[in-house]
Length: 113
Length: 145
Image 1 (cartoon, each protein chain N blue to C red):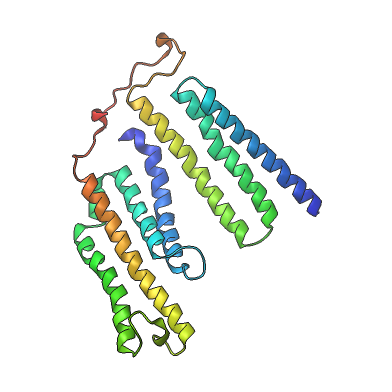
Image 2: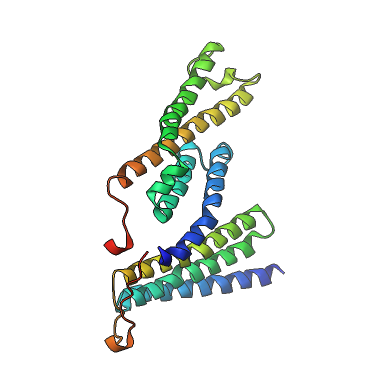
């Protein structure tokens, strides 16, 4: 049983590390703000969540698991929101995505508050 | 403000839990990591988040300036009052041992009360600093971006 839990934690850790590595690589290599944000969003949400799941498996049924669960819930809500806020702010000031022909873009939104 | 919808919903969801977490850090500070300063900053962060999303005016209504003028000295008063109380009970200034019947109980009580005083003042000062800076410019409208 312990063996299975250890193997599962390792699988989750490796998956989490993979996503964090991909996210970092994307941050460094991708051409513009939106694509970098797209890569960075993965790091916080998926990478961290998988690492937290691995930690929960190791912690077993204890108060630590409950705390880890709360942390993962918090990250699950806040990280996508932060990414959304950044992308939304960039869109609001009129930053256009890289490599998309102007004709394919919607005209700049001018909605009022 | 329409495109702030997601931010508004998520922050409404989170603010109560931020306040609750601040209280946990405050009153669990004598058993685990935490204490008055950290709790005060977290408590103030909830109000800063509220001000960022809903505007400084709404935050000022939720936490009026008159409270700040009361809470900042109140925390210091609680801290110093604990010291005076221990003086009056026959110890030295902030000697917690004399506050309760046993020295250990006195230490528990003294740290709890003193940290509460720190928390109150730090919360109010943090909010006061934020209001002072945020109030210097007019409200930023979407058109100004």
